[in-house]
Length: 115
Image (cartoon, rainbow, N blue to C red; front, side, top):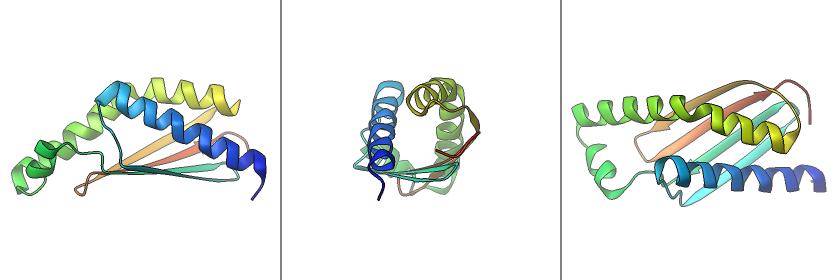
């Protein structure tokens, strides 16, 4: 693996960890970052608190929880976008996010240029 890409992945991993902790008090158990061309994929595990884990087992509460988690990220997305753009030096075209009932977050980030 290219050392620059490996270092960039580590930097983005730390940015996402700091972002989740600072904005949502989420302490992900693991964060994996994959950079390929203009695509950045970030997979976070263990993002739910114990109370949120309990909510995930109830159908009505789980729907509300997922909706809340998506809106929460949507409102703070500009902060994450700015941090990643400063680190990569490239404009972000799009960030898509999926939250899973297992306490996972998946971010699909498209950069304007290939890194």
